[in-house]
Length: 237
Image 1 (cartoon, one colour):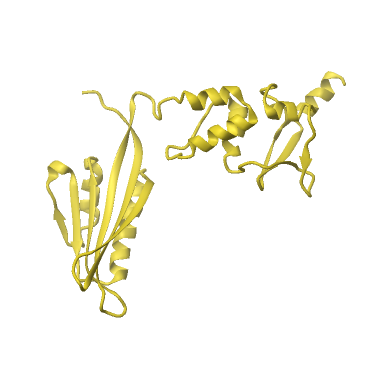
Image 2: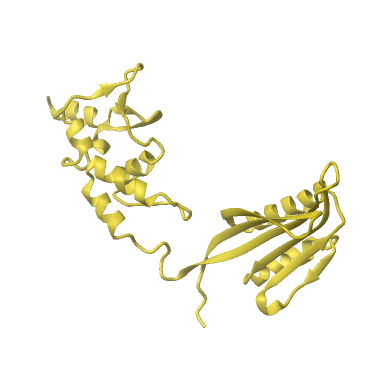
């Protein structure tokens, strides 16, 4: 095989079916680390399986293979800010025997560079429901936003002036929106607009949670919480 043929073979697209997810890459990418399982697999050291369409088949986590393949392409581990499956990814890296990736996962870098930190916004909705009305009626709803991002609080205060708004203690950087009696649609409308406004400021939802509790015989309280985050540069004093 002359150099031209070898170069063509190294860049010829290869399609993998990993747990039902299809990925197309080059042979040279798959062989970046010759001592890895993929390096041996595409060197012909052991038999390979094919699916019904002729794609190479690997019975592993197809979603996490995205990060495996990106590491093969760049030799850098890049994960989303809200990534929560590090332990599973470590097992995948161990299966593929990609030693540099295993080292990265065992000795992770800081989530952000030293001059970056994370800004947080908490949104909570507290709905008191009447148990004995049909359909169930919302007696009163309170939406509360808590954050240290003063510009966001100011923007919310200026953009949601039509709502009955009560400013809480500013030392806690908290704004409370209280309205009611109201129906479900009013509560949803305000919540959707608030969430949309927060996300347009560059925040993404980190997690959500729901809490149910009974206060009196005829009332039931449901609390919903959302946490939003975004990276920001530190400002020197």
